[in-house]
Image (tube, rainbow, N blue to C red):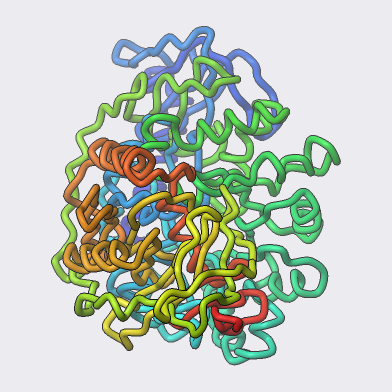
Length: 603
C-alpha cells in the first residue's frame, strides 16, 4: 500500500475506535445546529462530530464530547457540506491560486476545479505545471481539468504553445489533475467536422486515454442541439458537462441527454436566471444541474462572495435552498466521482460551512478538513504568498507597434464594414454590417454609433500578425483600452476611439510584459501589470488586486466614459472563436459558426 492509502486506512480505524470505544471522543463537535442533508433534501436538528480531518458522525453527538473536545454552539444556524466551484479559471481573476483561495475560502467554497486553459495557450505544459505546483501546499482542495488542445482553432488563431494528445500522459497522471477540461476544439461541431476533421481524431485519442485511467472529461457545447449535441457528447466520452448553456431550451435538451449542465453565473457571463427556468417552470430533475462561476473579477469575489453568492441568486430565482446547495455539493461531487466530499456523512472529509441566514447565504464559519479556516468573512489560516518562477514571466515577445500598423484602410469616402456586436453579460456576440467614413484612406470610428476599431496583435513571437475589425457596444467615449488577456490564445486585444491612443495602449502592454492599460490623449490613465503569462500577478494580494481592478473600472467610467459592466472581461471574450457568432483573432475577423475568416471591409 502506498502512503496515502495507509493513512486513509489508519484514519478509518481511528474513526471506528472513537465511535465504539467509550473512552474515546471527538476532536470537534458542532452542536445544536440544523443539518442540511443534500442526500435526502432535508433540514433537521443535529450535531456534526469530527475526528482529525473526517466527519465522525451526524446526529446526536453528545456521547462523543469529552474533556478535550472543542464544542462549537451553532444553535439556530445551518451546517452544510463545503461548496464546490466545478469550473473556474484563476487567470480570469488575474490572481494566483493562493490569492484566489484566500478570498474564496471565507465564502464557504472549499473545493475548486480549475481549468488552466488560458495559461496553456500562452505557455503550454510548462505553464500548466507551474499552476499545478502552486496548489500542492494549499489547505483547500484545488484540482485541475487540463486542455487537450491548444489552440482551439488551429489556422484561425495563433497561440504561444501547442498542446495535443501527446501531452496527455504527462498531465493526466498527476494526482492534482482531475481530467480533461472543456473540449472547446469540438464546440463548433459541424465546421470542425467539415474543415478540420483531424482535430476530432486527436481529441478522441486524448479522451479515450483519460477514460482508461479513470479521469473525467468536460464538454463545451454552446447552442448545440440534436445530432451536433450528440456528436459532441460522444466526442467527450459519452458523459460530459457544458458551461456554455444560455437558454432554457438548451438546458432541457442537455439534461435529457445526461449532460451535467454547469450553470454559469460569473462576473460578465450570467446564465443562471435563464437556465434555471427548466427546473422552476418545467419541473425537470436538477440532479445534473451544477452551479459554477467560470470567470470572476476579484472585486466581485471580495465584495459579493463566491459560490455562496451564486447559491443566493439561485434561491432568489425560486429554487429551494437545499436544492440550490445540492448544486454546489452533492451534484458536482457525483459528476466528478468525489467519494469523500459533497455530503455530511460519516468518514467524509470535514469540509464544513456554518450558515446564519439560509436565504441570503450568509457564511459564519468555514472548516477545512476539520480545521477552522475562516469566521465572519475573515481568513483564520496563515497561507503564505506564492511567487512564480521567472520562466513564466516573459511571454510578450514582440516589438512595439507603429501607428500605421494599426490603421484599417479602405478606398473612397465611405465604406461598408463588418463589426462585432457586444452582448452584455455573455461571451456570445452579434454580427453587424455598418457604414463608416474614410479619411485619407483610413476608416474612421463612429463614436455617435458606438462603433470602434478592434484589433488583435500577435504577441507570442510566432508571426507578428495584426487582425483588424470593428466593434459596437464597448461604450467607450474617449481614449483606448489594451490588454494581454484575450481568450483563448491571449494575444493583445485593443480598442479605442482613435488609432493614436490605441497604439500607445498596445505598446504600454508590451512594455509591461503583459497586463491591462487605458490611455487618453496619449497619456496613461490607468494600468495593471500581469506578468505571469500576461494573465496573472503574484505582486498583489487578493485584496490589493480587488482594489486595483475596482480602480480600473472607476477610471474606465470616469475618464474614458465607458458604461459597460466589467469592460475588460467583455473585451477579453471578443476573441473567443469557439463561441458564436463573430470574433477576432490575430488572423482577422472570424465567423465562428462557419470556421472561416471574413474580410472586414465589404466595399
